[in-house]
Structures are given as C-alpha cells and as structure tokens.
Length: 268
Image 1 (tube, rainbow, N blue to C red):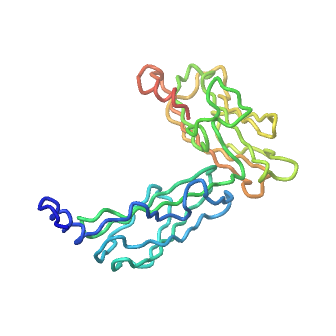
Image 2 (cartoon, rainbow, N blue to C red; image 1 turned 180 degrees about the vertical axis):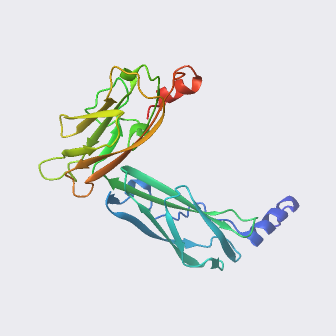
Image 3 (cartoon, rainbow, N blue to C red; image 1 turned 90 degrees about the horizontal axis):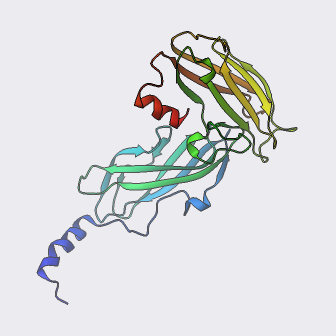
C-alpha cells in the first residue's frame, strides 16, 4: 500500500521519536478505586515500574511532583527503548485522611518528547481527624466539603472591639477502626497565650467539639497580629499531641474590604 505524500512526514516523526502507548499506565495500582489503605501513623511507600515508551533512548532530566512532601528516588535515569526502571515514591500520612493522589512527572532531556507521567493512589485511615466546623452548621458529622477537613491552621481577621466575633469550632473524631479503647478523649489543652479560651464537649457518636472564643468577651482585644500555637493532648496512642496554629489579625478596619469578605466566606 502506498503512503500518501502528506502522511510521510508524520510517519517519519513516529519512527524517530515514538509515542507513549495510550493504554499504558504507570501507577502503583491499576486505578484509584483499588488504592491500598495506610494508617495515619504509617509511611506511604510505593515502588513503581516505569518503561521507556519511546523508540529511542531517553535520559530523565528531573522529577517533579504535585506534592512537595513526596520523596522520590529513581533507580536509573538512562533508558534504551523498552527498558524499564523503578521509581520509589514515599510520603508521610500525618494530618491526612481519606483518598490521596500524587502525580510524578519525569521530564526528559529531549525537549521533543513529552514527560512520562506516574501516578500514586492510596487512602489514609486517620488516627484522629481534625476538621473545622463551618459557621451555622452542626458539628455532629464531618464536613462534606474537603476544604473544611484536615485543618490545623485557623485564620481570623476581626475588629478588636467585637470580641464576640472571634470564634472557631474544631471537631475531633476517630474512625471506629482506629479509635482507642473506650473512645477518643481530650486529656488537656496546652496554651500559653491570653487571647483565646477553649472549651470541649463530647458529641454523639464519639466525636469531640472544641470551641475557641475570645477570653475577654468585654474587650477591646489587643490590636495587631497574634500568631499562637495550641497543643491538644488526647488518649490516642498514635496521635497523643495535636498541634494547632491560630493566626489572628485584630484590626479596626476588619470587615471593610472585599478581601475580608472572601476570607470570611472561606473560613479557616
């Protein structure tokens, strides 16, 4: 069969450079639905076989990942056509819960070749989930929106003469599979500052609600930025200390700019 003249340059490029097989997937599991589960206290690690899909030798220039917390190590950076190597991907699971995904891009020295993409999927069984409770919603269940889950830093921008507006709600819970004997308990809260007051309350189902309010409800509160650390002590052996950070700006101009309204809508 004769090849049309217009198609010959395309065929020549395919012969020279090759193309990655569309059906080929470089990943630790065939799909996200088959992701393995790791406890929050465990370290995620996967060794993935990566093949050179091009019809020419390649050299891997650098590795890039969608999560800076990932640790990457590749066995070989030079591969002839069809040759394989192994990519090791590791990550801490602390402060995580639920489905996780990391994509690693293997950039090549040849600019004409597309990067090789590698995927990692896994799930994290948390020891203790730490969620922010959205304003105006009950704290009985975990927030449905992931934007409110696994929150360890809380931001506020309020007026110093409105201490009643300085308020955060934090929900702690342990899934049944990882709950300590007798259920989760808060043993104490360590806080060296004077801005906040903390109260705890057990919720139905074993969760715990921590409410943070201004210690001085009469005000005015001290102006300026207050960056403070709070440590919640629990009876969970895998997560006995939960470190929370509060970043508060008390400013007489709070609530008067568009940025303030966006921050208020986004929450912590």
